[in-house]
Length: 61
Image 1 (tube, rainbow, N blue to C red):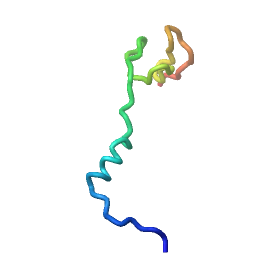
Image 2 (cartoon, rainbow, N blue to C red; image 1 turned 30 degrees about the vertical axis):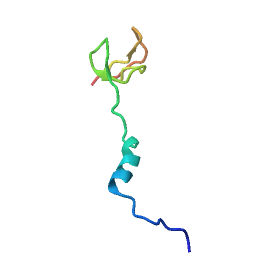
Image 3 (cartoon, rainbow, N blue to C red; image 1 turned 180 degrees about the vertical axis):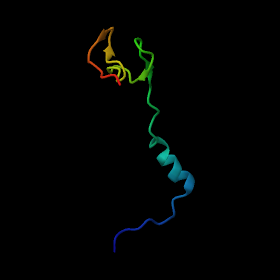
Image 4 (cartoon, rainbow, N blue to C red; image 1 turned 90 degrees about the vertical axis):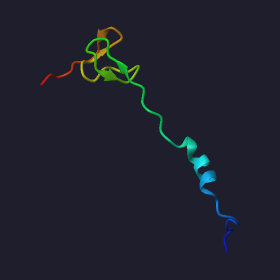
């Protein structure tokens, strides 16, 4: 037979172990060109602006 735990792990001990499993909230910054929220160090998906210049062309509807 495989080894089994001798005692039930309490809810408090189980939850303390899982305390670090939550995902952190994503940090968003405001685009200096259009004002939309975007991820830091990434090209703005709404206007294609990055580091003070237009990097990609974004199709407008």
